[in-house]
Structure formats: C-alpha cells, structure tokens
Length: 317
Length: 63
Ligand SMILES: [Zn+2]
Ligand SMILES: [Zn+2]
Image 1 (cartoon, each protein chain N blue to C red):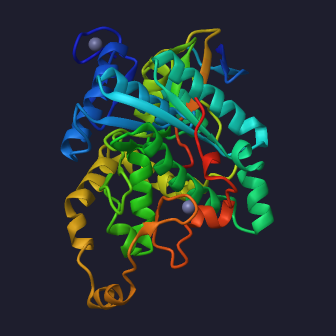
Image 2 (cartoon, rainbow over the protein chains, first blue to last red):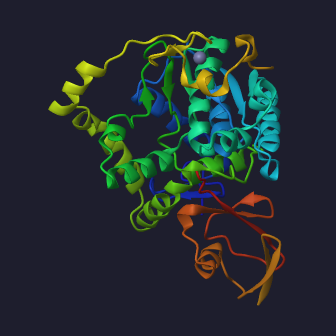
C-alpha cells in the first residue's frame, strides 16, 4: 500500500477516510483532525493556557504531544492514585513525567499517598466505597485544583472517539437522559470551575495508538486494574464490529449526536419543578475554599479525605 | 511454510501469508489491533517473511 499523498510506503490504512498514509503524512493527519475538533467545538484559542491531564496512557500522552506540536501553550498534571497492583501508579507516573520532560512541559504531580498517607484502594476499603466512585470524585476535584495551581484557562483530557461513542451507546441503551444532555466534548466553565474539553474526539483509539507508535511515545500498555471504563468494553466491542462492516460509523454516531444534543437539553416539566426547589447556591468550601453546593459548606473531597492542612493539597514539580 | 514470531511465540504460516490472513487466523477485528513488524507499523497487505517478529498491539482500552 502506498501513501495517498506522497506515494511512499504506507504504514496505516484508514478505512473510514478511505486513505493509506506514510508515517509523515499520518502524523500530519492526526494533528489536523485534532485542530479541526478544537475549532469545530470551539474548545480554546491560540492564546489560551491548557492544562492536560496526563495518565501515562496512550491517549493523554498523544494529546500532550499533538497540542505542543500545534503550538499551544500547555502544562500538565498527573494524579497519583497510589495503585500498587503491578506497580500501576509508579510506572504510569514515570512514563508521564518522562514524556513531559522530553517535551519540555511542566508537570505537577498530586499524590494521594503523599498528601493523605494512603492510596485509593486502601481509602476505598476503609470507607467501603468502590475504588472507582472514590477515584472519580477525587480526580474531578484535583483536576480543578491543578487548573487553579497552573493558572490554566481550560482542562484537556485524552478521551477519544471510541470512549465517547461507547459512553453514548451505553447511556442510550439505558436512556440515561441526564448523561445524554451533557455528553458534549466541551463542558463550559461553571460555578467557578474551569472549562473542560476533549480534543481527541475525532480520532479513534486505533489512530491514537498508531500515532503513539509512529511518534515513539513510551506509554503504559496495561490498564488500571479497576478501570471503571471496563463496563464500556462490551459497547466498544460491538461498535467496532459495526465499524468493521461499515467504516465511519463511530464518527457519524458521535458527531451526529453532538449536532442533536439540544434535543436532550430541553427540560421536562418535572425537572423544571424540581430545579426551583433544589437550586442551592455554590459557596466556597469551609476547609479548602473550592466551590461547593454542599449544605454544610464542606465539599465532598474534604468530607472524605479530611485534609488537616489545606496547604497539603498541592502538586509537586 | 514460514515461521514467524507473534508476541514472542513461534507460529507456522503458509508462505505468501499477509497480515490480513494472520488477523483472520487469529480471529481479530482489524479495527481493534495494530501490527508492528520488526519494530515498524505495517498495513494489512504486508507479506510476512520467514523470521519476522510481529507484535499485535491491542488498541482498546478500558476507560
Ligand atoms: Zn506520505
Ligand atoms: Zn473542600
């Protein structure tokens, strides 16, 4: 197979786009698709400062690489969950930090074991919560802290087309309308929290993995042992079976949804009534100062982790 | 027949076999894998040679 653009030997065929590309033109393709998504969904502008959440996996490291290559002003942060299984946290942190250093990007590390003396597994065991629910809450909070500490305008995460399409598929199957109203790749700044964006939504996992290989990005190949997303695996599998028969399906499915999302954002009479009663104003958390709607004025992060000193919640370079 | 190494394990294949035939043999959906042959990413029409070392990279991740 030959590259559609230059005729040199191709390294990948993209059936959804009906092209084969050489390494050079494939890299260009991936970067262009990312730039297109950023523009299409109005994610950010050239002068914005972007905080990239890096996990050591292929998606977030590819995202960091692409954004720096496109000339954006980028910083990174890594959340160390202290997962000991197969040295998951240790290895992924090393890969994330090594790549940031290679790219000359500042990376702040927020380490649960260092801040609170325990990782997510131990904390989950003690509180009898599932590691994934605790992890979700903790990561959402620390992401906002990282954006504040880095003085970033927007937080970017490595979610790709497969992640978004699988979540959409799963939530459609359950008619989870509250999800369907907010599955857009851009979440606007709200209640004092920064804007959050997913610039890789035009790219499949296969394209991103190929990009990481071609660019020589060293990423963690294995997964978080809990991987909440594992519940999406069956949806990914089915979508890929359809994609194999009809290339381009995943993209049409997700992009069509983003064009029709307003249909899910109309509130039912029921919801309008509830809203009038429930709307509680955001105020700064009594312990850490981050915005919270909790009635007792203590955010869910502080209620769980009980930082004895607010100074402790900080990233290390 | 030729002998190739798939993720470190030796496997016999008919001569003139391609990555596409290998993917079919292994029952893999081409949308979910990449093939790195002797360190280089290759398209599915690549004709495997005796002694090739193939890494099958699964691209599907949990979350
Ligand atoms: Zn080319
Ligand atoms: Zn708090």
